[in-house]
Amino acid sequence: MVDQPQSTGRRVLVCRVADLPHGESLRVPREETGTGDAIALFNDGGRFHALNDTCTHSRASLSEGWVEDGLVECPLHGGTFDLRTGAAVGSPATEDTTTHDVEVLEDAIYLIPRT
Amino acid sequence: MSGAPGSVVVVGAGLAGVTTAEYLRAHGYDGRLTLIGAEDEPPYDRPPLSKDVLTGKSALDEVRLHPEGWYADRQVGLRLGVAAQEIRPAERAVVLADGTVERADAVVLATGGTARRLSVPGAEHPSLLTLRTARDAVRLRERLVPGTRVAVVGAGLIGAEVTASAVALGCEVTLLDPVTPPLVGVVGPEIARVLHAQHEQHGVDLRRGSVGRVESTGSGVRLHIGDGVVDCDVVVVGIGIELNLDLAHSAGLAVDGGVLVDNAGRTSNPAVFAAGDVARRVGAPREEHWDAALREGEAAAAGVLGQPAPAAKAPWFWSDRYDTHLEGVGSFTTADRTVVRGELTADFTAIALRGGGLVGAVAVNRPQEIKALRRLLDRNVPVDAAMLADESVDLRRLARGV
Image (cartoon, rainbow over all chains, first blue to last red; front, side, top):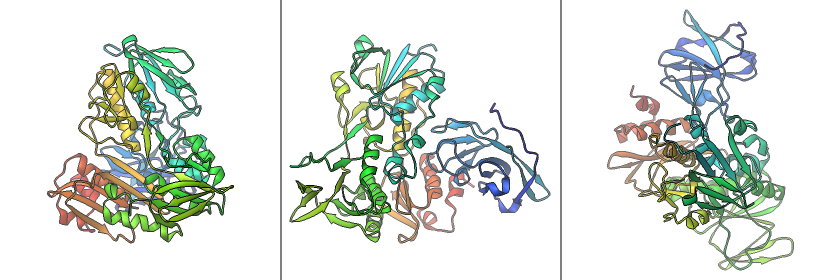
């Protein structure tokens, strides 16, 4: 298990479900999330996940990564992370990342960021 | 761990060596593990050296392969600033330059290469620099002040990136290469021309030819190229590497354009493995890219453990110069047809086909398409040339099979 920080409990409206098709991702800037890093929101086969946007290996935006089979691959060097747990599962990434909760209400996607 | 050697010494602390150590620990190896690096620097990532480190955007401490405590946390004995002098597989020993001996039931050679220098009269002039190590990058950065006249010899990936960085730093740059355009073998002729033309668009003086002689002019040097000359303050020589093969030779390993290895990274001596720039898989060309070093490090580590190697992947590389992010996968050398998505004057992806099958691709500022093509290639997905050329077809969907 990856230890995760506390949830802020705040709910941030990000977009409509239709705005984020399968395999797509979206970068939610810090000004909107109120977190230390921007948050990348992913649609992996109809399941929504959110991770800290900056790869733990080097400065790249995971929102530009490849999303498939529960994983996101960093666009820069190909390190991979488990979308559900934030675990670093593929080299060169070795440091786990932070996950954030996602809620879908009606047709809207909300982020509930951790600190 | 049953079946695994009691001690492993990894010689070389670049990406291949560090990845080997990392993979061993990540896959349960609990024996003695030592990583030997000839440089004083804690292990670092090389690609930023010609870009962010050179332009000052990143400090060296920002391009370490791992944070400071990483090695101790994983009980990886890191010995820096001391080169390995000899490996003695029969004695299960690695002798270091300071006279100490490390016990090694298995050795992984990841010794890489050393920047090749010009071998022409006058080439020993101190204004002729190379870029391979962190120290090289720091030394070069000190010289690249605005207005400096810089000659870059060799317009391959390193030469092109150093040229772009020097331009960004306000230097006056001349780029020399005997081949016009360079990189044809890597990216195909159309893209090679487009990339090479970028230098001119950024005010670089492009010269075709090779340096015959270097003359000292007091503060700088004069390069003699055929009938012409280039006067400059600093010369950066980017003409490839010489492999560091001394240890392999002294151990009697089979060497032919690199230390020969099998799919598991095993050399002709079953207790010795090799990975990274120095290694060449039998029957394949030797690879020098970042991703290859990583994959070969993983394969060698799996070999040491007697485990199956991770699935092989098509070669992949990237290069950044000016506002261009270049990425390539596979190879263009065997292509009989190329299709292009987009415009060569803007962002595009060129796809190399052979007999209707995908063999390679290269893209400018379209990393997502390369990611898709890389998967199509690795998964051996049959492709249709017309579909690949059609911009309205999302390559990512093809790769996902949806």
